Length: 444
Image 1 (cartoon, rainbow, N blue to C red):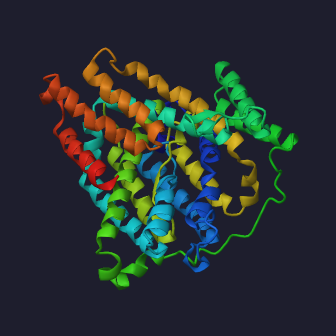
Image 2: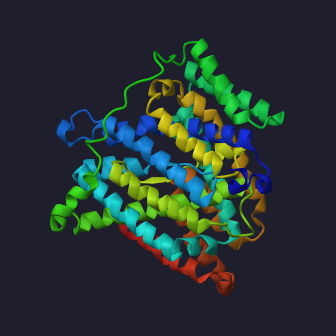
């Protein structure tokens, strides 16, 4: 096992990988609660019950899709990256495709399935890997830093430290609120542990925060340990229903827009996350990501599997950086995450303690670690600084990793051409320039 995952070459061991995997799982366990609520449109009161997805089935589909995806990523690509249904993608699925477009959720799952199959073909052809390797190192560093700011922003927001402000869009939250104070406490504890050089600082910080939250009544202690596993029958295989009448359900302009949007967001969310996590873990070899093709194949297959099970597109989770910060370096940590997702089917009541105040400090501190890649960008070269800056700031400002990448990649060829360095731009970057322009013109 140690030899298969390359523990010696990566300077890791079972303890670090298990702690790293557990930290990653705890950082992303919220998806087990959020995804069923989102896909079942639980926040929409007047939506007909017969048009909703079954929340219990979605919970099981979410856990199984995350487990299978993480297992494939860990064994096939050997990356310390976990997968699960993506935030943002699930909101697009539920609120745009189902609620706004009026597309039945079964047909929406068909769109996910088709997008996943296209991804598998692109991955097997090596096209996705060539695109990632064609991205200049400067922009890869910008992507990593931008994702760091983005997840830190998510952490501040979920903790209530940053809140909505009608006058200025965002503002400082109520720092006297119990849950917000608990998150601030978690940040302080994690920072202290990291400053002292504790390897498992992020994980230990989360455990201490959860315990303190239960002591002060800010987090409800679980009432039981084991609960029944819901049935997956309502969603399993529903993605194939639309193939009975493809002319009415699949071959439409609306479905084309749905599939293209799933393709675009999932493609570049995954690309950005792979590069960011690999950079933090020290896996990158120069400007290229080793085994990128395997990682992309595992990611693509997980989308297909997730669609069949009954959930929105799965993607590589940026929360994997929390596990890397806790010591994870190999695919074994992803296998640990997969096992924990399987166990979560039976121990769902215990997940009630993994609330926003517990996970927010991990996201914020990991964001601090990730923005360190800004030092590798040549800010004194304006033709590089402009696209890098837009890539970094657009992610938190637009609340989208993919949009941040798109904006930066549109400006990169422009500034390089004006600077007289058009030949230094990889041909695929010009191709992406056209694709991104079409995305902003026709899909946004």
